[in-house]
Every structure is written in C-alpha cells, then in structure tokens.
Length: 220
Image 1 (cartoon, rainbow, N blue to C red):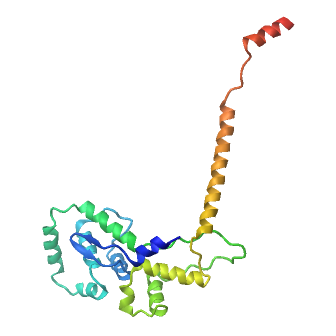
Image 2 (image 1 turned 90 degrees about the vertical axis):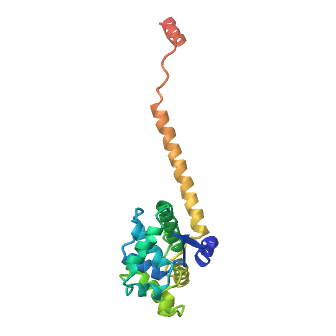
Image 3 (image 1 turned 180 degrees about the vertical axis):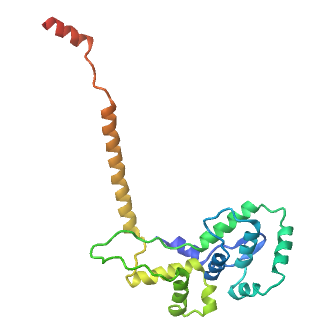
C-alpha cells in the first residue's frame, strides 16, 4: 500500500536548487535548519535564508559543522547571491520546500482504536529527532555522524516499521482504508437523507384547487 512512498524515501529523485545539487535530506539537515529558524510553515523565506538552507543541504554533517569556523562565509554568501540576481527566487523557494517535504515523508498512522487496546501511553518528552538518531545508532548500528547523514524520510519509515512489529503503533493499512471508505459512505447517506427532509419541510403543502372548491360548494 505504501510501496511508492517507501521507494521515494529510499531512492529520492535528484534535486537542484539555486544551481546546487542537494544531498538526500537527512536528520542533520533538519536539525541545522531548525537551529537556523528555517520553518516549514513559513513559505516567505528571505533570499539569504534560502541560500543558507541550500548551502546546508548540499553538504554532509561534518562539512556543515565546519562552516561555523569559516570567517569568509558571509562574504561567500553575498557573492553567491549577487551571481543569482536573475534567478526566480519564488520558484527556487518552492523547489526547496518540495525537496524538504519529499525528504521528510513518513507512513500515515492508524487512528482506529482496536478492541482490547490499553490506555494511551504518556507521550515522550525527548525531541523526535533525538529519538530517531538514537534508534539509528542502537538498532541499525549507524555511527553518530552516519546517523545524522541518514535520510530523514527513510529513517522515519524504518522507525515506524520497527515499532509496529513491537506493537507500539499501527501504520495505516488497507483495513483502515476500507473502514474510512465505509464511514464516508454512511456520512454521505446521512447528509443526503437530511437534505431530503429539509427539502420536504420547505416545500409548501398544495392548496385547494378550483375543482375542489366547486365540489365543496355543490355539496353545500
């Protein structure tokens, strides 16, 4: 059911933004963008913010860490932005948002409460990226740097598949889809019935006709 999404997470299409070829969107990329305040919800990023985000995502974890020690970074960004003065910034920003969205794809979870399921567990307090990084290092035996460079969407899917096997969560499946389709059909039928009743209430009752009035007069 989710094979196409898994393929996109494991084998993402190449992406180029502002003339730079981006690496597979990783845990480290997400962490660096969060640190810089580059929010997914904000679709009106400044040109400088987009430049910085692209610079992060075309490098690995160690390369990005080294940027903090680069005293010429601001000057390099200024020169790069000057060379891109004819670029369509809105188009490039949308391309980057699509790259980030596709790189963060995950399995949808089921919200159906199964019979016999216990009370909801206490939500974890640790940040999800940290728990995901820990999962990669402990369960998949990735090194610390390797885990930060691991594709974010693929890591999410592997994390969800592992915890589904452990009974910790349930990934949306064909049974959930059939249930949702059944519920949608029932709700549509209820709405149609309600509209029919409303239409009948709004329709005035037919008044007496001329023939019925004449017949009443004749009987009188």
